[in-house]
Image 1 (cartoon, rainbow, N blue to C red):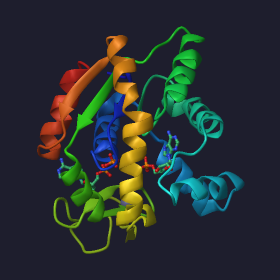
Image 2: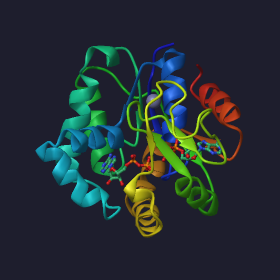
Image 3: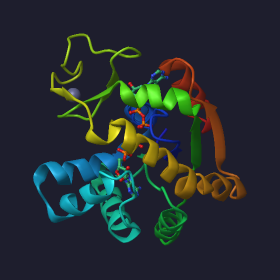
Length: 216
Ligand code: ADP
Ligand code: ADP
Ligand code: ZN
C-alpha cells in the first residue's frame, strides 16, 4: 500500500494533519516542505535564513532551492517506495520539476488530493494552531487540543504558535496560495490525477475520504 501522493490545499486545510496519518498507515514517508524549512531555520543554516525572509512575509521561497531540498529528501531510504508530499509542489515550476525527476526514473505520482476548506474556516484554524517543536504534529486549541496543555500527545514536546500564523501574514499566505498554487489544480486535473476531498469534516472522515480517493 505504498504510494506516491501529493496533498494540495490552502494553508490550514489540514495537509499536515492528514499527511501524518496517511503516511503512518503505510503509504510512505511524510515529506513536508514547510517542516524542512523550519528545521533548517532551527539549525541556523544558510537555507533557513534565506527561507525565513520569505516565510515571514507569507511568500514562497524561490523554486530552485525548494526543489533541490525536497528532491534530496525524496532520495532518502524511507521514501524509496512511497511518500506523502505535504506543501510541495506549490508552483507549476515545482510540479513540472517533480514530474521530470520521477519520469527520469520511470515513475509518476499516483494522485494529487485537494483538501477543500472555506476561507473563514482556514482563518479560524490557523489562528488556533499549535505545533510540536519536536515532531511538528499540529494541534488546535479548540478543534483538536492536546491531552496535557502545551505538550505534544505523541512525544511530550513543547507546543508553540508559528509566527506566520499571525493574522497579517495569514492573509498574505492565502493570497499567495490563490495566485501561485491554485493553478496546480488544473495541472493535475488535466493529467487525470486530481481528486477533491471535503476538508470540513471530522479528521477521521477526511482521512477515510483521502484514502478512498487513491485506492488505499
Ligand atoms: P501551511 O501548511 O500552513 O501552508 P507550510 O508549513 O507548508 O504552511 O509553509 C510555510 C511557509 O514555508 C510558506 O508560507 C512558504 O514561505 C514556505 N514554503 C513551504 N513549502 C514551500 C514550497 N513548496 N515552495 C515555496 N515555499 C514554501
Ligand atoms: P495545513 O498543513 O494544511 O496548513 P494543519 O494540518 O496544520 O493544516 O491544520 C491546520 C489547523 O487546523 C491545525 O490547528 C489542526 O489541528 C486543525 N485541523 C486539521 N484538520 C481539522 C479538521 N478536520 N477539523 C478541524 N480542525 C482541523
Ligand atoms: Zn511531538
